[in-house]
Every structure is written in structure tokens, then in C-alpha cells.
Amino acid sequence: MDRRDFLKSTAAAAVAATGATEVLKAAGRAAEAVPEDKVPEKLLATAPMLQNYAETSVGVAFAVNALANGYVLIGEKKDLSDARKVLCGGYRLADIDERVIQVRVTGLKPATRYYYKIGADRIHYGHGYDMKVLGTEEDPRTYSFVTAGKKLKDSCFCVINDTHSRWDAIGPVLDKVAAIAPSCVVWNGDASNSEENLERQVTIFLDHPLERKDYAAEIPYLFCPGNHDSRGRANRHLERVWMYRQPEERDVRDWDLGRNFAVRMGDVALVGLDTAEDKLDTNPIFAGLFKSKEYREAQTHWLRDALKRPEIASAPFLVAFCHIPLFDDDPTHNPGDVAPADYDPKYSADFAYWQRTCSKMWGPLLDQAGCQVLVTAHMHHYRFDAPGPGHKWAQVVGGGPRMNESEYPTVVEGRVVRGKLQLTVHNILTGNVLDTFTFNRR
Image 1 (cartoon, rainbow, N blue to C red):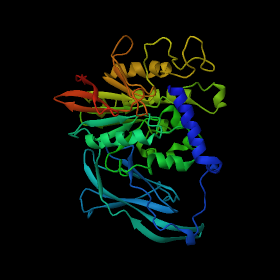
Image 2: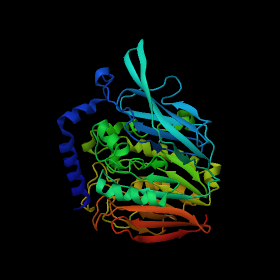
Image 3: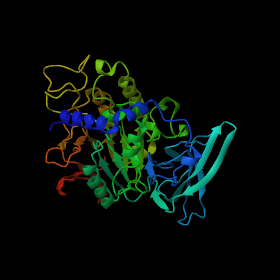
Image 4: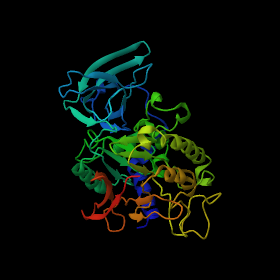
């Protein structure tokens, strides 16, 4: 099955599974609290997920079964005797939500182990003058993680991609990540298909049907969205389940770039970009509802500044990530800039195999900064592109979402070994190592 047939069959299966009732729910989440006589017995629905971590901050997200105000207890002592309580929401109000709780913890120390617990207050909300706490529930487990930072000794990361809600493949992928136990994981896009309701997003990130429920409770995740992660009514508001950084963590100019990241992890600087759609904004299929052009331009300004930040510029190794490849040497592969509607008979498909527009904007900046390797995804087939004319960086393209010999999934493992960056590509179908690459300091 080729990539396009796979996506069509996946989309059809998703519509059949959700049904007309679920599609109607896409118009928005219910604003009302669950009636008290029908309140679920258990309030906390999932283990926590560490999102968008950095040197001095981390996001903690989890699902609940009723209207709640969530919180995190966090400290440096294992018994949490020094813990502070951080509520969900921003400065003015603590948030309440009937399905997803998001807590952004700031003011942390770099390269430091923290211990934490999650909890939630069950809230009765009648109106603006009728609110009360019905009870509090805390997860009995204490979790831990280590913040990013220059002094981090273990410079190990993993990359997964194009999971597309294929649980038969995601299970072994997460098992491999758990065995490697990296400092962080980069989820390199297309976690979704085309999601029309919040519940599907909750399933994908927080409440998946796998035995390993706490897959991201102690291993922080970073996210580079793929083209499918913006498709569907719900995915237009992906921040409901995958939080942005707080405003004070971003420059005013970069307000809408909450998922871009530039993180120092020991000797490695990790930089994440969003290639956005694999079709042009002018393609009639999108009815003028996409603005990828402006988004990519804004990221170019962000990238130029991020690469100059002292902790990023001084890192011996620079690894960049984005979903759609920025290089392809096959002249029949569509470069994603064929106006107005992506079709040209000289190309084998009417969607982008690679992103020439992003390559022109971001490639020279990565070259100037001495980026050694770019890790991408999108094509569902693993390959390696060596540095060549027009790009000094190597490119690793991750595998696919199916447990077969054509679109097998990969886990890319990166770690510093004896003063060099070593990338190991694991074939999740066979359990074998596909390739190992080493990169010198820049």
C-alpha cells in the first residue's frame, strides 16, 4: 500500500469509527459541568505527559473525567517535602476543564532532577457566583524527570514520527524508547490523521489504548507538528492537548510559535521547526483556510535568533528537526511550491515530497550555524541523505506507521559517545539496527 492509499484508508476508518455523533461534537467542547449525580467515580483519567520541556520549564498535561482544576506538586526532594503547588491556567485565573488539564511549570533549575505528583479538584460550577470544590484526587505515584541544560551529562535523545494512530506499531516504538531511556523524545509529526473532535486528540496523546500508560510521565517530549497535525476541526486547536510555552518564555514577535523549540541538552542543541502543510495555501482543497506561507516566514526570523542564543551557539553538536524533508535528489518528487494547486505532470504526485520553500529559508541558516544533521519524516520510508551541494548537513528521514517491510517504523537514537555525536537508526519491525552515523564537533 502506498502512502496516499494508506492515508485515504486511515481517514475512512477514522470517520467510520467516530460516527456522525462524534463529528457533530467537533463544533466545540461542552461548556457545562457534568451533573453531580452523574459524576464519574474516578476524576484523574490518565498518567501525566511531559510536554515542551526546556532548561527552566516543563509542561504537564493529563486527562480528567469531570470538570476540574488541576495542579502539579513539584520539588527537588523525593518525598516532596519541599514541593510547591502549581495550578493549571495563566496568571489571572486558574483554569477549569472537563477533559484536559495543562500545567506549565516555570522557574526550574537547568539540568536538575525534579519529583512531582499530579492532582485535581473536582469542581461544581453553576454560574459565576456558584462554584465549589466537591473533592480532591491525587495520583498516588511520584514521578521524576530531569530538565534540559548545558550541564546535563546524558546527551541522549530519541526521534519517533508518522505514528498516525497505528497502535500496533506505536506500542513497539514506545517499548524501544523505554528501553533506551533517553533524556527526551522528539515526536516528529503526523501523530494525527485528520481529527475532528477533542476526544480523538486525547486518545492520541494522553489516553491511548496501550499497556504503557505512563510513556511520557518521566521522559519529556518535544513536538514538531506534521501536515496531518493541522488537518481537521480539532487539530486547528492542537494546543488543547499539546500546550504552548507560557508568554514569558517567548518573544512578543514569536507569540504564535509556541511549539518551536531550541533546547540545550548537554553537548547537543536541539532545534525544532514546523514545515506545516504539504500543499500550497492556494490549493482549492483548503478553501483559503491555511496560512503556511506567513507561518514559515515567521519561523525563519525565530530560527535566525535562536541559533545565536549563547547556549545554542556554543553547543558542540547541533541537530535540527522538522516533519517534511528539506532535500530530495529525485527530480520527479514534488518540491511543494508548484503554484497554484500543487499539480504538474512532471512530478509523480500533487503533494510535497520535500519542502523547497523551507529549504531555501532555513537551510542556509542551518549551514551557517554548523548544523551536522537534520532529522525529518513524512515519506513513511527510511533513508539517509549525505551532505552535498547546497546543504552541508546530513538528512535522516524516519520510517512509517505500519508493521511491514515497506513502511516499518523507526526510532532514531542520538547520543554523544567519546566526544562524537552518534545516531543509531533502529528498525522496529525486525529489532535490528539499520544504520549508525557519527558526526564530529562543529
